[in-house]
Length: 162
Image (cartoon, rainbow, N blue to C red; front, top):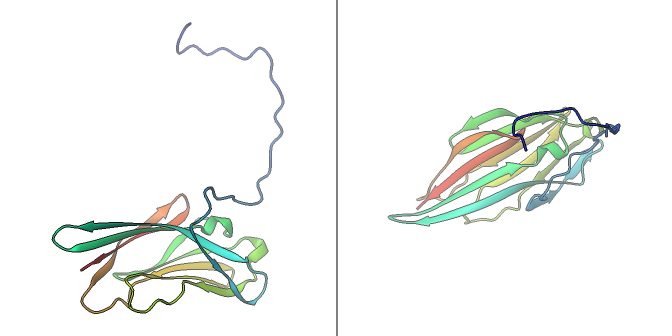
């Protein structure tokens, strides 16, 4: 056997191009929320993947990674719309099917918990995804320590320190 040598195939089989009309996320997001439609045609649900890591050294610390599944409903890459220490928001153009959507999907309110507030907002032909830590209880350090686009999707790493 000779390595690194390429030879043309003896016979070729025609391959039919397949059109992709919907992005299938695999695995499915582990957090899914129903979209509350106010107008237009909206997706039934939206979701994101999240994983939390806890540490205990000198202080209790928790880090959470969040990746929003905007590609399931968007026609292009997400872009950063706004960013502060405890808040970040992304936007992406909606697929033509959902471009008329006006609505929202929020994470449930859980008072006195160390969790972020997540929101998908639909308007003006775009989907907006935000992570909000501004309502963190007193005495806890919290902040968004990294945000970027990964695989055309919004990525956020946020942290609580006690």
